Length: 259
Image (tube, rainbow, N blue to C red; front, top):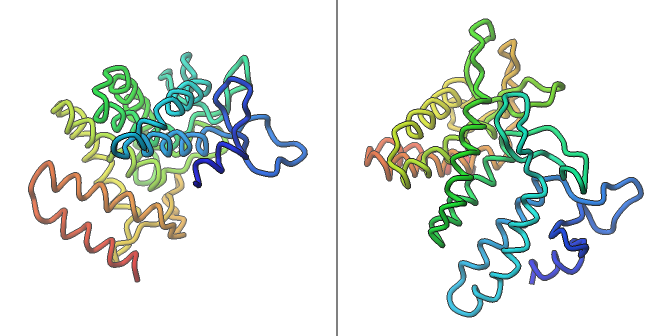
């Protein structure tokens, strides 16, 4: 019912497969939503196709439309690191594009892995691998920065933050790709992202602060999504390594989040 409401009120209906940012539309709104909310509609369609039998099959056509809409954000020329990825806004001819955000791309990469696991679609797996290479290109390699390392949040010039939300989902994507391919490249980078975030952004009680500036200043705000993803990352590390410490850590973060 929720997804039907999304389609009824937010779908643009012009053949692009794209959505509006909000309902009712306001004066000055872009004709299409930013990439991040669109990617969540894409994931919703993907999840609905996972329902058993006819109920899941009924959403397959819409998933095809949403996957096509997702590509309206694809910047094949690449951003500041030279790696292609999904821009924050629709690219030409339907829009003017936008900066690349690493967390935005990580959500799509995770959806691509989910698509591959559901349908054995090799194209989706290749796109997830492509996105992970973009994420790795966002790693801070400047040793003069305070607490060097970590994946930046965005390629936009107005932010140089390194965030929990750009590192932990990156680790999650790397671990999912490792489970599929068994390529140690993915496990190695996922471990680096996990360790950096734990060292500099995790509080003693297990919760995670939002981000760190280049001068080492930590923005201490605690957001729920910054706690949920590390729980999943630790569960994946446990599945891969069978080391019980990761399951204990997942439970610790979950308990702190509940409190």
